[in-house]
Image 1: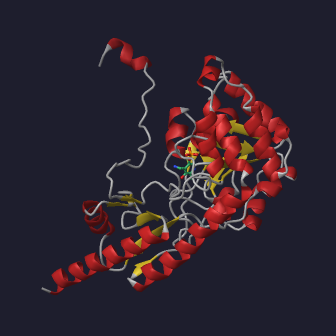
Image 2: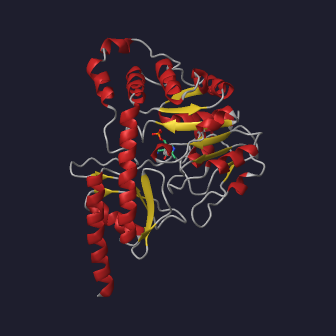
Image 3: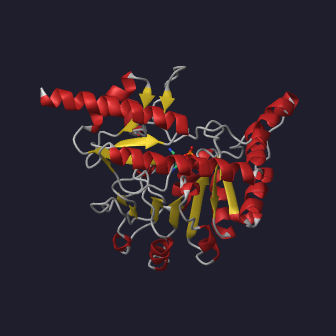
Length: 359
Ligand code: PMP
């Protein structure tokens, strides 16, 4: 060990899903949207004046924050914007999780939470999901330094009823409760209306999934103005210009087109329901998903075998070699055509497997 090494902040980083780049691939591994962003976003690139890049962007991300506030019927002071919800959540951990007591999040959930907690030296506990991958609200009724969970949860897709979220809020008035709504637009109920009633609730959303802008990096948090002020204080103590000029313009254009957003979300929901029925016919089992993915296990064929066989055919899904979930595949919902192809290939693979078992 080098003499200076004792002062290094050593961390085990988060591993993002792979980003392969083959022309014929079907990419169902990182929960991206298969449809392009709202057409107005392309106009931003067409008309953007590169000379503007000499100047720093607006540190308040004002136009975007106002557009988000307007879309959700909130005040500007209730919205914070950042570089993807990863940035917003990391900033929120830093701002609000400063207790000696452990923060709480489920054992099976977004695998970035423990990475941020470790990096920021925040103690944490991970109450186990029940057998059916549901969050048990009672587990969040003990002393803690804060709470975070996604709704719907990732990678399970399971939605927690709003009444249970409110129950958790009622039992935790002394800490900040964060609801990570990365996937809420695909048919789950948002906790946004509760921010008027609970001043310790922070609702976090992203443009990466339902607004087809994973490549732009836009996320936001909504909460009472005091929470947003605290978040901004930390942001300005870290990096004032988090969002660049092009991204601010793209995000603003995207959120103004409500009809396009609703239309693409409903196409994905329809394809998801079709895919659920087809997967069931093939012998897959899963809890009901309200997200743009399905977390499924096959009743006989191991997930890892299917993951690798699909990969060989350039169909990418996500596999987690982790306790409790290492026999599941997380399958993002692509276009209807992509999902039909997936089902066709799965049929072939399962027939091959069955033949091998019978020999
Ligand atoms: N929360 C959850 C539950 C996620 O799955 C993701 C996507 N990996 C994020 C937050 C972060 O998304 P982004 O930074 O693209 O907004």
